[in-house]
Image (cartoon, rainbow, N blue to C red; front, side, top):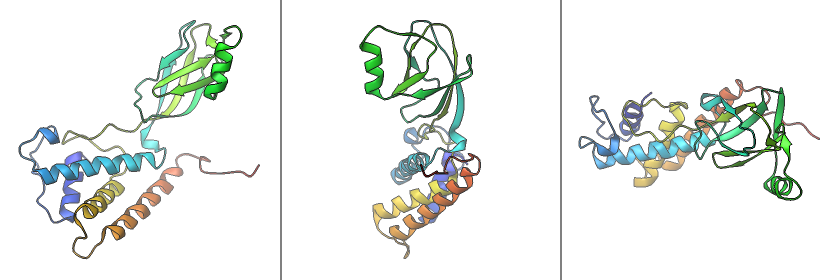
Length: 218
């Protein structure tokens, strides 16, 4: 479902005028979209981020390839943004998993004693940057399993990546809270419905990611 359709679904629930089907382009640049419709567009994006952050959706996952350079510690994660989550890092060249290291441990190894070079066995994260220890001594093919949320929706025909039902319900709940209850449906009731539907969709998606929600007693 595209951005325009999601906004219109919320507007219909609020019994407001919907955006014309021939609207294309950027929402905030359009003279054919009124200020309230633009507000709903903002609430859609706010809810989208809440939904994306609630779970590592399979729809948002990708496997990125990062080639190292001999003597280089820091690398930009391909196609990442400031909300990207790294799930797993693998040295595909040597068939080894690289484990995360705390900042303090990384700095201890990097600045206390001599600099080590070799096959990377640990990594640390700093925003969209990943650093390896030991410093790669050669070209290694690193695979990164990541979850990268979609950028804010701005264009009418941009398709939403995560499930649309919780996004519609969440934006509707926010709109009710912004202006008070609507037709007897309070924002708290709408918010509870959003929570329930979001939980249902997360439960369905966990079936695609075996054992990620299974906890074992130590």
